[in-house]
Image (cartoon, rainbow, N blue to C red; front, side, top):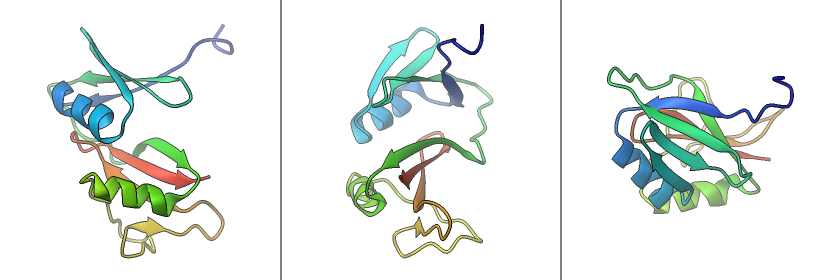
Length: 123
């Protein structure tokens, strides 16, 4: 039953218009408004559902990771589009906000307009 279901992820936002501008305009994803919220379609073809919530509080953890071949190029492109990379205490991030992973991937975090944490992660 669940093992062959068409699963999808979802998280809350506080402004559908701002989210659509960001996910479609800035990130270049397919974003379609529905009466219940916003569906973004990832390059894998999988959907992520963003729903408005009056008492929205941004996630304090990464809700969506974008796997990329070159995290430095991805960060440069995002910054060129006006995205600010996030900085976190306890992570050895360089001047662009990229954290090298000695035993894992290079990663850099940024936030959507609702404050939810996203990342670009080198695969």
